[in-house]
Length: 488
Ligand SMILES: [Zn+2]
Image (cartoon, rainbow, N blue to C red; front, side):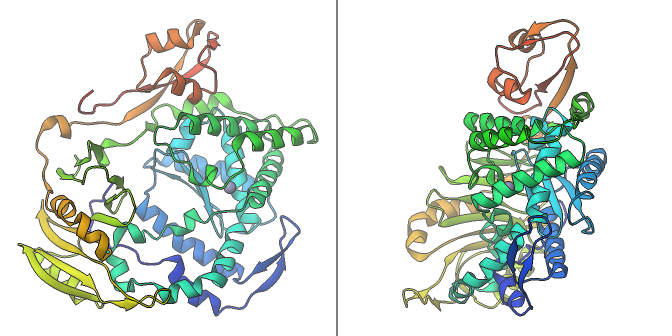
């Protein structure tokens, strides 16, 4: 999803922030939400400014869902929950990310994100509130701060040994997406604590807490379906959704009665029109050819490589994840100017000309302290003009791997060309539509009458029901209206 503006790749990596952070005073503090003593090396002020910095990266790199109504709604629901926590004074920001995956995550300082993919799966505001409550819990318990503090203690050695220069990182694209913080892994204890706090905040907000186990069921069914759905925050390190569901159900009985806000109908009506799945306007991949209708170009990626499409870069990575192809926009008026700027960077050495505006390069060898050997990265960089914009095309790997991949990698970065065929240009995303049933029917009847771009099983998961469910008259049911895509 490359943006149309000229962009810089942000170079603020967690690792690079470490030395700065270490200078700051810190120590043990009692956490207001959990009542536990915590090792905290950074102040609340630093926590907030760190969150703000990462927030800008998240917005630039993942992109916000372009719908003010949704952004305001999330802020309203999340803000109301956050106001009743032990840290109401933080400037809480809730955002919808324009991403089809099912995910939610939190940054230090009160920045909380949900993807449009997870919003499509919820069947009530109470379900949304349970995920927001969980993420709020990570912030109030200062889990990411604790995590970063721990990372500070262990990463200094790694930073010193990094074989990539900082200048090179700026160009290295995907290897340096700056989003490591999103993938900070919380411990299982942290996750359980965030679940408990989420339940607490839901109850304070008047929501029916039995929505929380529903969400775990949804996540479990969604990950069972697979199909390229990633649930990083909600799956990788987490206790399995089934275990969490069980644990939370046991706690429900102990909660005071009378919390019964669900808002199913209001929430479902909001979902009508939501973009569902990949938005092909911002790029899509068929048989490892990447098409970008908005910017009217196509590019081939090596067979078997994974193609990753982000706002500011499109990348390909090989199966062993040690060779990359990265496409970005260059901040230059001509390929010549971009080439000069690239090779003016410290730590990058120009090699032989590969073809017009393409050169071999390598990074200045640096000693790897673990092996004692000189390490460097090599590859080819090229710049081409397309529709008055200069594109940067970069491929690189360590020398041993480079020798194996260089022909296919070079073929990839020289394959960018204009996209002209209308069947690849005339595309539109799938959309979620909410139907009010005029009579009772089975889900199979529903699928027959209102065909969806997803399977019966996926439709059942989206609606929080089983595929053999009978649906009563007047019920609101989600369907996925197919968009236009080649081969459909
Ligand atoms: Zn979590």
